[in-house]
Amino acid sequence: MKKGEIWIINSGNSGGHEQSGIRPAVVVSGIVARIVIVVPFTSNIRALRFEHTIQFSPTASNNLSSNSIAMVFQLRAVDVKRLETKIGFLSTNEIKLLGLEIKKMLRL
Image (cartoon, rainbow, N blue to C red):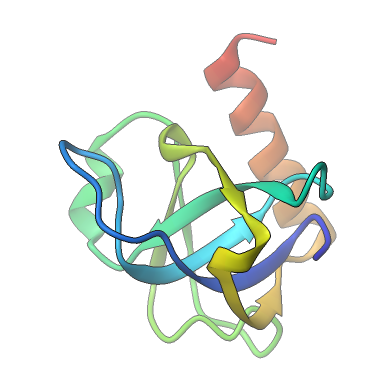
């Protein structure tokens, strides 16, 4: 599991406004103690109304099935066992864009 890879994750059920269920997510960290940091995607275009979101279109390298919104504001740590299947990866420029949005959100 490497930074920029897109995996199908099973984040289980959660309460409130946290994303849950089975969905694509992009890895944004290396593995530490069997934990990785991910940004989940949604196909719900209405998510663009929130700050800290980025839209990605399907490509041969990312293998997303539809226009997808990276919900940077839902940045989370997950156990590697929640990552089920690697489906693709982001380009170097897309990884940089995602990193800039994370820094902006965290005010780094």
